[in-house]
Image (cartoon, rainbow, N blue to C red; front, side, top):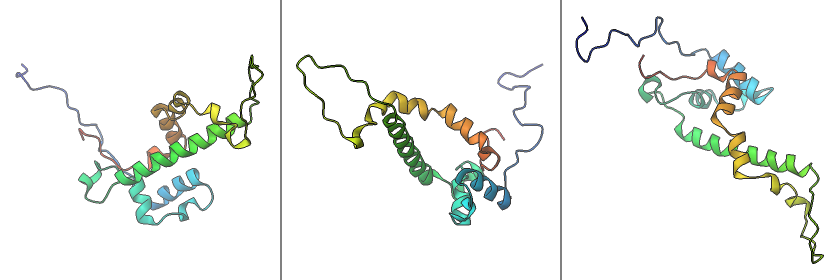
Length: 149
């Protein structure tokens, strides 16, 4: 008999949740993401902060909220620069103007047509970014704790 309000199911996993504590594994992840000597670009403390969520150890060891904000802005900037560069490589087609006017053109502005809000959202979609993080093995070094563990 099940008492009201009490569940028979246990939400605890069969094995304890494991978190990476190996600095070598962290360095390898930074090399995969940043390239050669990627593990030497940041101090050890900052590297650990970049992969630590506030749920890990109840935030006592520091976590990456401020770094996450800065990182998101950098990723958005890099995505925008890439979209502009990719659009600039494609020749622009123009519709002839009925009055014979020619629009202003400048090489710096050539790729702006490819920078749209919808395209940027598609490039920075959470699922795509999560797949990229998995591809580079970042999920193996993230330090966090699931809510029900």
